[in-house]
Each structure stands twice: as structure tokens, then as C-alpha cells.
Length: 181
Image (tube, rainbow, N blue to C red; front, side, top):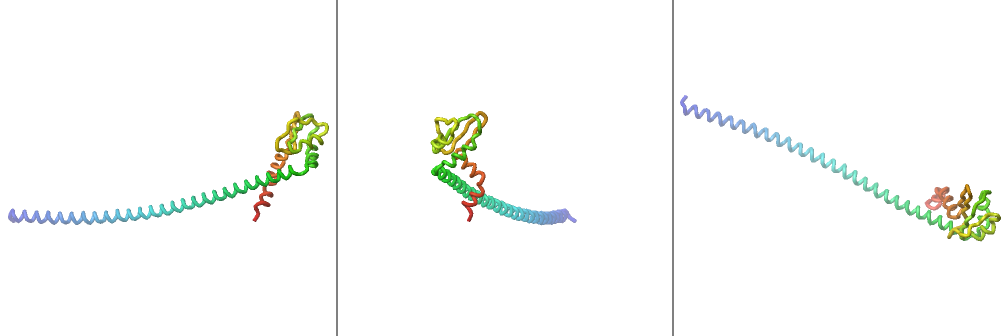
């Protein structure tokens, strides 16, 4: 074999080796590209799935928030209606003749020294019916009933206080009567 033939054989072999290496690299590169594309598709599906879940969660949270706000507004309206009803009830009591009411309330005053401060609406009745009890010169404005202050006792039987206690005690029944369908 001549030098030229040897040179040609080496170059041919190097060429074949380069082609095999290029083919192998191309095959490896194609496989790696396919693997990267598959991973990208899987990540895309995961991201889309997570986005759908998050969107659903946010939509549910928004719906619940709207429902709670709606319920809150309804409850505020009902609370306002209860307050108005209480005020109307109080005004009805103050308009009526208070002889029986004041007489009944005076029976609650303990047998001790003290001062009765009458409500403006029932001041004349309290002074008339509270014989033997000290009556304050001042009155409680826009109020019926009275407050007794003794050495050891304070008794608040003003009409607003009594109505408030009645409404607290019977709140469920009053609400049921006002808001039943």
C-alpha cells in the first residue's frame, strides 16, 4: 500500500467515523429534543390544570363572599327593623295612660332611703303615687318610668330600659313574628 492509498484509507475511515459520530449526535439530539418537548407538554398540562383549580377556588371564594355580604345586608336590615319596632313599642307605651304602669313599678322600690328620679313623661304620676318617697327635682328627658337610687340599691325601671330588656329576652319570638314568611 502506497502512502497515497494509506492516506486515502485514513481519510475515508475518518470521514466514515465523522459521519457515524454526526449521525449518533443527531440521534441523541433528536431524542433529547423529543424528551424536552414531552416535559414541556407535561408541564403545560400541569400548569393549565393548576390554573383551572385556582380559578375554580377563586370563583368559589368570590361566590361565598358575595353570599356573606348579601346575608350581612339582610341581617342589618332586620336589625334596623327590630330597632324601629322597639322604638314604636316604646312610643306606644309612653302615649298610654301610665297610672297602672307607674303604680306597678313603684311596688318594686325597696324599703330603704333613696331618691326617685322620674322620667319626664311620668313625673307627675310618680310624684302623685310615690307617697313617702323622696322625689328628685330633675327629670329624665323623653323618658317614662323612673330610676331609684338608694344607699345599696339602684333600680332602673325607665320605659326605655324595660322595653330594651323585654326585646332582648324575647328577641327570637319578636323576630319570628316580624320576619316569618
